[in-house]
Image (cartoon, rainbow, N blue to C red; front, side, top):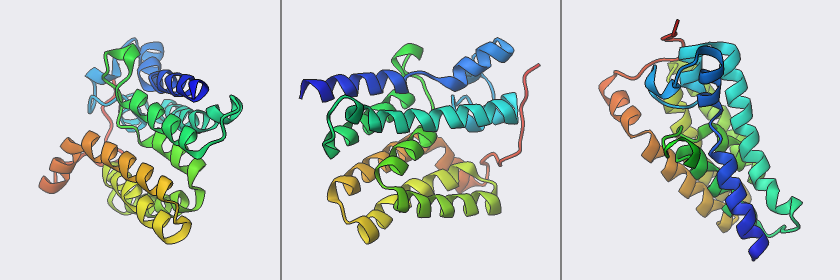
Length: 201
């Protein structure tokens, strides 16, 4: 038990590393949370810093999720619940990072890494729906919400693991809570579309 608790703490601290914030500091000397949408994530990085930094942030945040899920295994704890708890911990760390005043991103990229590691096929199918939605509507937030909403459905249909089902519901709840303002903007037709840039000089 001690080892997976240690793993969960490490996963949270890993999640607390905000690559979007660090990229803003390194490239422009700014706090990215004070620009664009104010979110420390890949989409706002694209809006403020451009494609290259956004791709880097997205990739690193996904890798955080993957690493967190595999961390218990590397420490000799292969129980599914240990991997699930570490997956939750890294997302919590990303959303509420201890290193940055508990003001982080919305956790979608890390969620992709976590859920793809735990339930690959359900995540892949949900991801396809999300990508098609983003391509058609150019609303990243809508695609993100649909991604997290459909994973529990596909887990029930394909995997039928109740442990994975409950974790997928929890991360979906995280996503909807973190996207509250986006949901309001979507309902009002005022949500920012992909490609709308607010660069900082």
